[in-house]
Image (cartoon, rainbow, N blue to C red; front, side, top):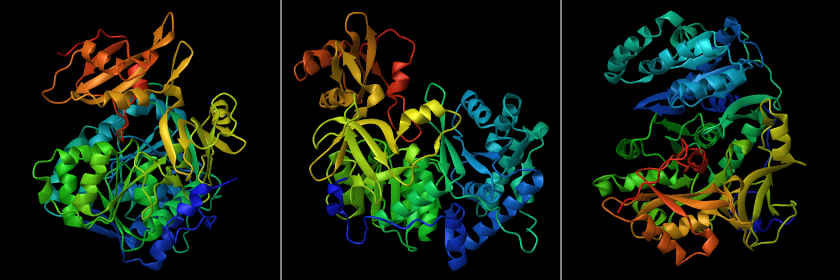
Length: 554
């Protein structure tokens, strides 16, 4: 197939890469063998070397096997961005088991459903979530809880204060008799120990995706797919051992896992771990730790803009900022490129392909609003929504792709897998187009398409006009049932602080700028819109809310 994007690759980025057929844990072990004393992680000022991380993961793998964890078993991680996440992640893989990375902020019902679906019997968490973990035992197959104390990885005196707090938290879960990670790491494996051999094509990681209000699907990622994506990201960002990646995006998500952790370890760089996003704290961390790369979503940079005395923070260590999950505005791009001197690189990925599979070039031409061009060995097409025929540049259709990083499928969902992967091509459900240069653009999700009397309405088209209203801070558009037209358009609006607008005013504004069937029939004002853990506005959550009475501001 034609690949017009190849002529826009940065110098030094090849059109194809060589992917070693190795287990995923080799990303850590190979770097540790080359440079055992190099810093692998930084956590609130305390460092952990590659050698120490490798040793800890080996010890955990040996301990897990001794506890009865067998090859292929699922082991769930309910952990924040902290050293225990990396120790557990690679320890589980070295035991021959499968990592199930869960969202610590998920509800108890969501966690119970996911643990039940994956049939995990072992759960690794921290004292803060120990009581939740203990309660989940009665709602799942979990019979073994391992608790990692964050105090063990903090410098003094913060570690002492955290130790007291964590002891109190553990007392609430005493009936579950959790095991402590530090006890499991106390004993080294016997001489001659080696990680459990695994087939690189076998399941390594299970991530749950797409379950904002319904049942989430388990995305099955192989060792080979995760290794391939790490190589693609390293090549695209031209990462080196001198790079320091600030990891505030969650490692339990494919974006954080692959870009912030796996690719960084492959490059031999350092990972600055930040367990939660607080705008001012992240800015202080950038100033103190001097990372070279930051990954984020547009909402993070909106929050940075609201920090008082933003100009006092030194951000010049950054040379690249990867941005995904939502469109990046020109104002945000110009502001933070000016403040940091780094290039903000907008890209696109999805869990079904591990994470990022295309991006604007690091050094080359950036096109605002574009998700960029495909990574090495990634083929992308735009196909007709009805018949699946390839479309020429400029025409809207569904984006389909193939890559060495594609998922094995959806766990225990063969029908959904067959629908998503056809003839080796992943049907993303995203609607967009490609321009003559091979740059791709997203317009909407296929599932978000609104059909009004037989006419297609793309929500983002309406939302872009909505954003032009001076009183509107942000808005989202969904389809609502209509007995005559099948569906009508409804808008959800967050007003700017201090601004006022009525429903009639908003509708009139849109009616002047849009075709009649695209104009919302109702507007609901909100103080905020529902978002995913990485900042995407959840239209599905809005569609599936119980019908509520409209509120009008004005």
